[in-house]
Length: 457
Ligand code: AMP
Image (tube, rainbow, N blue to C red; front, side, top):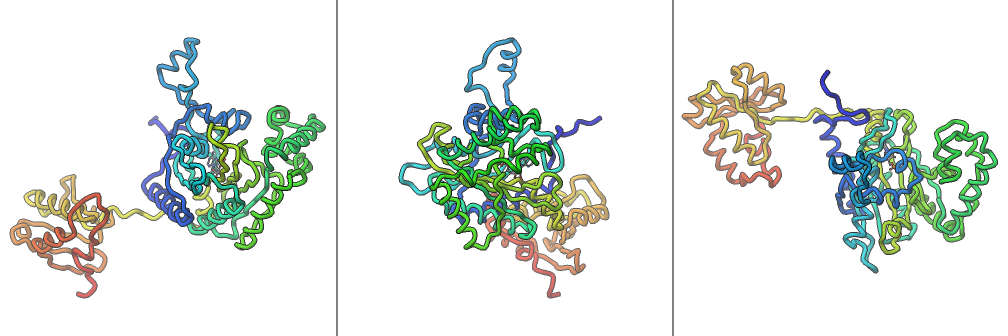
């Protein structure tokens, strides 16, 4: 059998790859209005970055992270040897840790400077059990705002995420925005202790994972998917009863900004999110209809301790990530179909082999000014070249015979309204020159500018 893509991964074929491109561009455009600039960080990072940043006891780090190992190091390990910690690499399971590492490494948030606002897009890797909306390689778009602790940053981030979802076509009514506060280093330990004591009092009712979580990281029990644990956690202590005055005020102010912006939200005191670095605001956007069991299309929150955790100066942070694949599911539930890409605007057909060289040159000239031009590469008959042009979506077809090459007058046919127009190749060349004929400078000419619109005849 022919080899298949690894379980939990998928190919983005041209139609979807173009959509992913548009999705990213839209995100960068919308977030750009809020001052976010693009950043790209490596797909592999030192394992200890994730262990320190995300937390050793999270599922993402303890169970789901892929280790990347060179052949040489693998041999050393198999032979019972040790490799140094700087050689222990992992495929990134999320984007925040890498962006924060880059911000510290390149001092992107000098003291007293405006906050650094960064946006990224790309694949993340988690060895999860694959199902609809849950992949082992998936794409995220995310933002990080580093250097400001005001609640307006949190509210601005949540608002712009909702705006983005609406811009790409997810109906506002289909989205549930859940928010909560996780408290800070002062009030959370007391809450954590209360949850630990609650779990200890119900230890016989817990799943094995939660028994373990109770000791390592009791708040993770709120994330447990086990039905019994879920039901039990509904009566667990609530963070909102434990927030210190500062955290309470921060949370209230975030909500007041959301209210003022007419953003509807649900306060969910069981929302803790899967990563350890969050402080204060956490939020998640869910689309319950059409996305299957995995309803969260995006989420994030504040992480005021993470920068220090990875070795930087104390720097408050806020960020979120949204999952491309789950957005597609939500969009498909709302009727999205990928557009069929147009491969070719003008096709140059050759009557016989004698005109191939002229056609080849003409096609190149048209491509150089930005048109999608194509010719036959398979020795097809003229009739079959017309069929191919149609298949490729060409709106215009020019046929080159020895006569056309000789006279330089070419007939261009509009395949939609079947109108024809004679084009003087010499004049056209002048036009092409006028448009510069420089590849890599973007589209400089349209088919209508070169060949006319064919409407007036
Ligand atoms: P997280 O980094 O876990 O906060 O996830 C942020 C968003 O990424 C989620 O809301 C999902 O939309 C998406 N996501 C997380 N894990 C997966 C996965 N395994 N497969 C597909 N999308 C995912």
